[in-house]
Length: 204
Image (cartoon, rainbow, N blue to C red; front, side, top):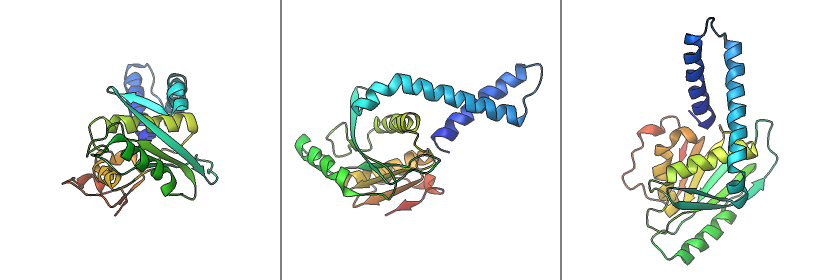
């Protein structure tokens, strides 16, 4: 399940509840149209609420701020551009060291197509990419790109180097329903459970 499917599943449950209370049933076409309408409404709400944070390339969750850099490659297909979230190394180091790693990460890879995003970890701890606030931050970041840039939610990828690779080991399984694939470079699993990776391509 991905971001759009998760939302659509919730919308479908709401529609089912409405149908039980309605005098007549709802056919498949009507349900599809209603779900599409609900998604469009949700997208417009996100655009209105999050335009400023997206323009600033900084979002806040649980009192911490995630900043990011962005590069765009290739020509997007009709379904929308892909999204590549690339996690920098460092961790357990002074902020200047992690800032240098962040600056390097935005230049590290060049996908053939898509929006390539290098976020700056909100902290400078050894586990900077798999603390508890990271999951909701990435959920929000993906939502922002789907709503404001038309990203295809079926083509969202996560990759990371060194401490960023540590994060991929953790976030790949923890957020498996958000990723189309994950790639880890020079990271350590730190006893991560891989049970939820059955349907997620995972490169080491």
